[in-house]
Amino acid sequence: MHKTTTLTADAGQMYEAVHFTHAIVCIQKMMDCTNVKWVAVSRGKKRLVRTIPHKYAAKPGWHVFSVIDLVQAFVLAVTSIKARCGDQMVATDGVPTGGMLSKIATSIILGWAEHVVCTDIYKMRELGVDIAGIPFNELICCLRYVDDVLFISHMLCKS
Image (cartoon, rainbow, N blue to C red; front, side):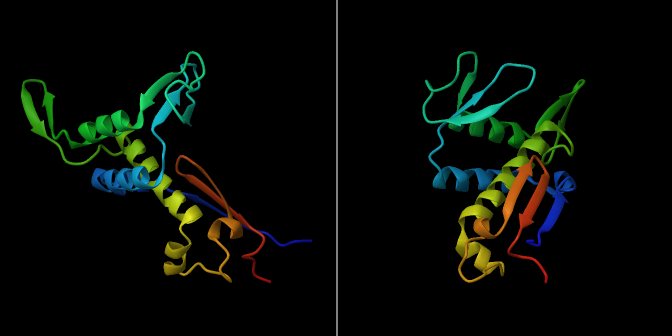
């Protein structure tokens, strides 16, 4: 029988440490290395999001957004540092902890980290993960749902 190592992690505390500038850098890197131009969002009770090859590839009833438009909306939302509170204007810094923008920024950063883990063998070697030149994504099955991460491996087990 094969031995299996399993690791679960929760990046929930990351919501408190995320700064929007890091999320913007991750977005720029992701856009530079992927060819995703369109995103489709379902309108039902359960929101589903899919990347699509062109704006006419969405299922009927789905909303289609340009990735560039979504990025610009996110950047505008997180860089607006003035807010009206009654009759006063107040200055803000960063994203409110636990708010929607904080969750979006965290998801962007974790998404970029996941991309690096699954595709960048040189970065993983730099971090000390290199076993006989086998890419990390072949050593470990990595699954992520929002801020919860699950790693499963048969190869990285202690005997």
